[in-house]
Image (cartoon, rainbow, N blue to C red; front, top):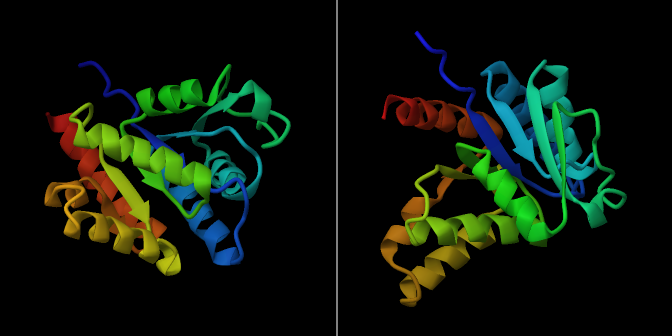
Length: 191
C-alpha cells in the first residue's frame, strides 16, 4: 500500500515579534504541533520575528521545514538556511505562489502588512474558486478582532457575499488551529 504523502501547512506571520511575548509563544506552540503531527511547515524562510519562532519550534520537535524567500529579503529577514528545503525566488509574487502551491492548508498568526497581503490573496483565490484549502486565522488574544470586524463590515455593506466569511476559520489560539487542521487535513485525505 502506498504511503500517504506528508501534509504541509503554510504559515503566514510577522517578521517582527510584536508587542507581546504571547505571540511568539503561539508561534512556538503552532510550530511544535505541526512537527508532532508529522506535517511539514511551509513559510517565508525568515529567522526573525514570529517566522523564526515557528520554524525553530518545528525544527526543535524534529519536523520538516520548507522556506521560500525572495532574493531581496535574504539579508533583511535573515534567511534561515538550515531548513529542510530553502528556496530563493526572484520576486515576492513567486514566493507567495511557491508557498501556496506546496501547502495543503494555510494558517495566519499575528502579523503585519505582509501577513495581510498573503491572507487576503488566498481568501480572494478561494472566493474565485481557485482552491478549496482550509484557511485558518489564529486570533491570539484578540489580535485579529478588528480584521474580523472589517470582514463582517465588508459583507454587511454588500461588497462580499455572506459565503466569503465561510472561507476563513477563526480560532482563538494555536492549539485550536492544530485541532481544526487535524480534522480538515484528514478530510482532504479521505477525498
